[in-house]
Length: 160
Figure: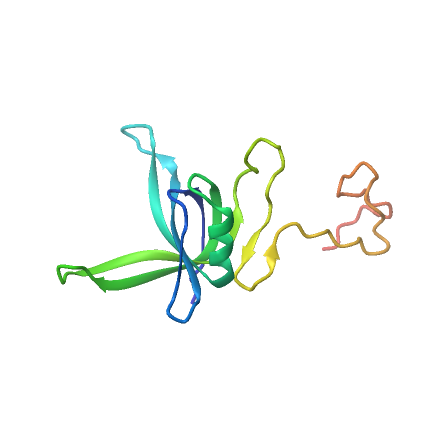
């Protein structure tokens, strides 16, 4: 079975950080996510408002660094919950349980720097990793910063 979802959108409100009775942090927020296509009659894109729940360190990360209007990329799984409303009616809600959350926009306040990190549920920061050194025999990357190097020992034959 596979239950994996990726969404990118803007927070519709500041994340709400709470704690369970045992002290586990949990944050909830909603993302406004535009659909990829436009409505034929109006020519406008429809926006979906998707509820997201983050737990533990991910919850603390999102509540500390994200605010209303910020772009976020969420990787997680879809969860359907059944619940009873105040009038006793049966209700059903869909929400994304976040495994990883990343910044989806540039750093604010105009200093031009970009965010490319996020927080992984496993406790390891994601993004901003140094590229591994090139194996010997493939040549060093060019000095101008380009990550691709010209192959010097290409005999022109395809390997298949």
